[in-house]
Length: 64
Length: 168
Image: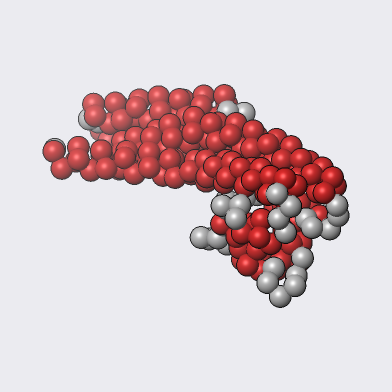
């Protein structure tokens, strides 16, 4: 996994947090919750391929 | 690398401009209400001070919406009937009442329904009451416009940044 990828996820996490804070301060708590969940979903989608590659590597390493 | 950076900057700029355009509508509503308030003040001076007839006073109130109502009054219609006739059209894209909300239009309906229907003192009261309602709506619109500016522009910028991070 490239280091860029980790920084990208960290950047998305920070931005989503700031968006959620902004929306909470504006009184839109429900949209803030949606924004947080959307950010989480986006990061999970980005990571799912990496996890899949990881399990494939483990399987090939241990010949499972 | 430079191309990616330029593309990322474009995406961030687009996000910011989208946020700004979302807040534009609320700002335009506040500006439209301000214009109508000034026009109602001029109308009050012309009708109760200079005893001008309704149609002429509306025409000379220096407000596109009032001018449209004055034009619709030709044919002997009252101000209320004229406003009823053009209300839907005025609220469409590019119309003089495009950015007004239903509450704003209701206040104008109450004003136009009473215009030219009673004596000088009653007209003065009607116009005074309409001014009060419009001032209250304008104050609320200004507060909402400030809130929208503080929310949508940074939100657009942040979403643009996030898209730039995800896509580029």
